[in-house]
Image (cartoon, rainbow, N blue to C red; front, side):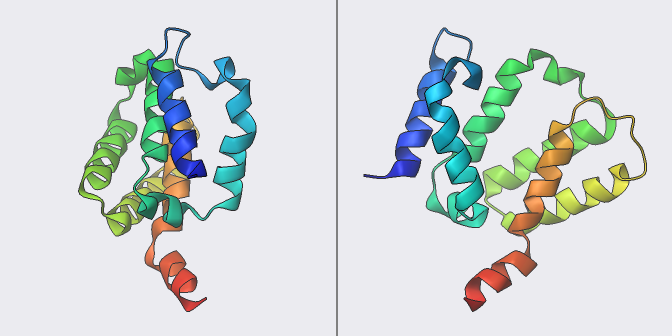
Length: 136
């Protein structure tokens, strides 16, 4: 069996259910999701082809229906993130994330923490991480 596939299918079921598309409504997924996010290298998750991060992003957007309220740097970052994900370019995601992270590091006026967390996580997809991974 494919544990990552089962997790993605379970997340998809939660996302499409009438319960509210929230992980709060599915406590049985908490432990497996944390195990995958903490124990599996994120580059391997991306390369597996399973849309784990896309499903989590959709859950975030569904839970924050007012995500259209993102303006300025956050909106630009999410547009660039979407483009990078659709093109499957890990290096582009890492560079766009680094740029956003540098622009944001000086100010604390951001209302939503998700763009900053995405930018930080995207650094795991850069050349430095890939090089270290291939060396092993």
